[in-house]
Image 1 (cartoon, rainbow, N blue to C red):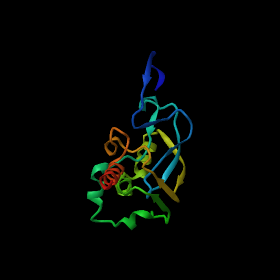
Image 2 (image 1 turned 90 degrees about the vertical axis):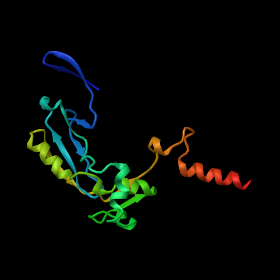
Image 3 (image 1 turned 60 degrees about the vertical axis):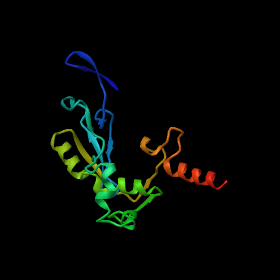
Image 4 (image 1 turned 180 degrees about the horizontal axis):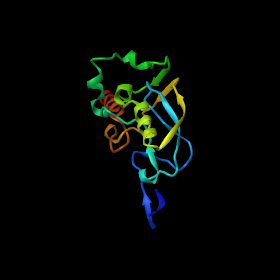
Length: 162
């Protein structure tokens, strides 16, 4: 949170889904199959609460990703990006959840922000290697004891054999 003076009144600004526009250069990431953008936000953009988008944003929910994309892609299709870069990911579900088709076009998002006078593009970045990890797994994949379903299932099978 950031304290701000808004029309002479002290207020607190909490950003959810946004990055500060008054903290210098920023990166607006695309997906692993899209460009990312180094941008210079306009620090005087009070009409946008001194904020810019912090990424391209999702267009397919995580829970729907695999079912929607499985008819169009094979697992191997998701291990490279359109730029020839590699995707390193040991979690099958995460590989589908983070597929490029799950995200909006980053260039369109940046163009909209630039058109609104909130930033200017400094550089366009292409992903070479993308590393995805399932450390810090989502709560729905963990049990109260901290083990995910696969670990719990394997542990249960070992106990049954004894």
